[in-house]
Image 1 (spheres, rainbow, N blue to C red):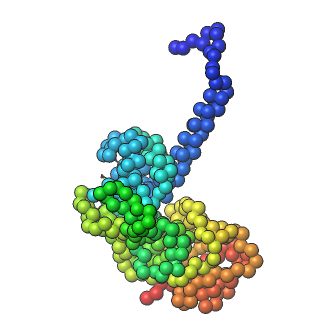
Image 2: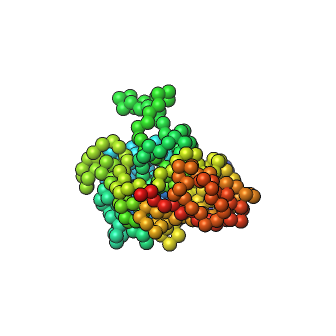
Length: 348
Ligand code: HEC
């Protein structure tokens, strides 16, 4: 035991300053950890489970650690992925700070020894993940662009190209640009069993497409079964089933989209984002027929009468419970825009 007895210790720095410094360091650490948790929920939970206890990817909380448990080793795994297995490389998707934060979070859950959940009706280790109407499965993975026109990806142009990489010198050429992955990096894809699957783009903050009759075949990406090599460096799931809706043209509302995250309301994902100053939530659910999608929107800061301009090519598939819909142009007052539902009929 250290006794401070009668002589108070002489600090070169004031004790209060030390205390403040420690507090600051702790609160910074706490902030990074919190940020890491957010990143984890967004990008990793679909495979490693919401608590890191495993799903498609391994349990990160148990005693089995394959690739090291130091901060540096965890960072390296996250940056580079495990190319022969299903673990994607994240260095083209996440910022270095995000990787650092999420590594911190992974470290914090190691040793928790949570039991690996086995979800009934949802797949665990299979290239054919699946959800159900009551328990939709949400995944963040690269999704095919399906030849949607460039207008649909207006805000992707910054991130769709990356500096060209040569493995020989491990050099990223900032001038030569590469498009290594022909997939949508910000995709969030949701499956309600055979009834409906959809792909929401968190960069554009819009629904890109729907399909029905299955979900995705991840063999290209994860390989077939455990231990198998990936078939090609595709990183993209292939759709199973038939598409019902394909977004066309510019976004319905002009303005910079910004994704704020999603939460689950009774297991149903609800996206939160802003377009310009208007704040939206969007919840997409299956409709009457396979491939139909019912899109529940709420909005804030919708001033006066405004229009959502869908492409005329999509117009015949869309209807709204509020406002007037004419040739794809939906006019809503602020009151109507507070809560409205757009129903999408799948194209036969
Ligand atoms: C597409 C599914 C998938 C996603 C998404 C994913 N992982 Fe993984 N991850 C895996 C698989 C599969 C492995 C096991 C690799 C192996 O067997 O060598 C793995 C391994 C790991 C490991 C090494 C575990 C060990 O035992 O050493 C860490 C750490 C890790 N992932 C962290 C993350 C983080 C952080 C994210 C999000 C940024 C993430 N993973 C996203 C599938 C995924």
